Image 1 (cartoon, rainbow, N blue to C red):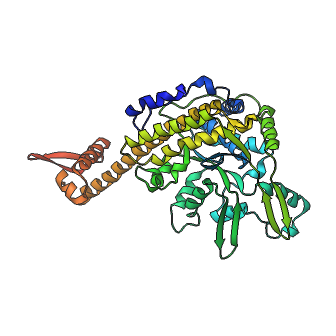
Image 2 (image 1 turned 30 degrees about the horizontal axis):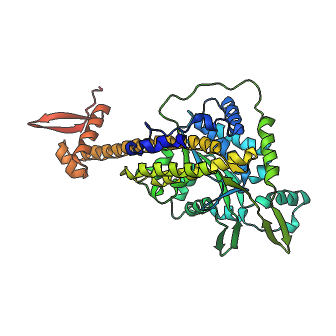
Image 3 (image 1 turned 135 degrees about the vertical axis):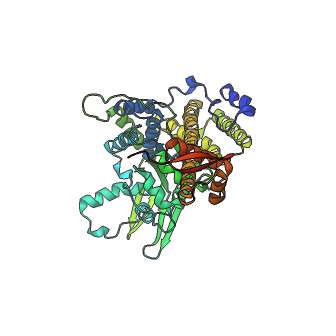
Length: 459
């Protein structure tokens, strides 16, 4: 267990940013723990050469999570499964978010797993309806092909993958109480908990029941579109919503400038065949239909946990808790405390895909290394949110200052402060910015300065 002790040896000096003290497990131990993921990343980098490197990893993991469809489990306090939610965050046009995600979606489709995917967009009620274990209305009137397609979906009707390209639209709608999308806030959290059932009762549809709910979610969004919901102190940090998310966010570096290879993109059999063979090993849940009622028998493949992984989980968790204790900012506590859970879920995917019945230290080590990349990425996001929030407030302050100057004849900074309610520092910063940008000018008045709209010199 020496590969984990460095985390605990340093934990007294760690701060919650963790950027200068990143926990790095022994790279050699987990190097070959999931060759499929390594091959996927190479292929994705080839065909999306301008993407942030963590996007490729995130999308490959999402493919595995979607195909697993709640058929991989382990007992660790309770039954654990392999679902997760990840957002690719980056400025439009610079980091190839959608291009990278489309490769993942194409891999699922080409592998023959398209029935596992939810539609591009839907309401919460429609999602629950589509995942409920029952026959659709008018089933008896469907064609033979339509019935065959539905029977292929039915064993996995409650276990789905969802790719949402511009998730900002969903988040904005979710934040409005009068929006039909508002209930996604609670629904997505409940689906992540993977309880035995999820029930939603409505007047129009009655009681929709999802058996063995499971959702693997991949979304794309820009930092600016996250500002309204992810600013420092925002409720979604503390209410458990964002704590269930992983964020893939580029650091402050120039985007890569690679070029597409010549030819047509085609998902290689070396990526598709292992998924198809894994799917066969995991098995298809047995479905019985009696008088319009559906019964689905789920028998997930159970993995055992190597004792070293058990110890590693708690060493990692204790180190993260120590970081939380030494930091007064609470926004990221929910994310930190769930990082070992994500590492366990990734370890389960690696173990099951390899055909092993045991989650080994190699699987765990590779998973922790990936989760640590996501932890750094979380801080890149939070730093951007802090910066954007400050800039937004500065702009708001400047607007208030400019309104006072336009309405009141040549006010002083003290008079501006009295009229706007801003702090002395906010007025000083706002006035300095406006002077630099050009819309106002200052002139002396005794021992003080006054401010007015800049007089144009145009004739």
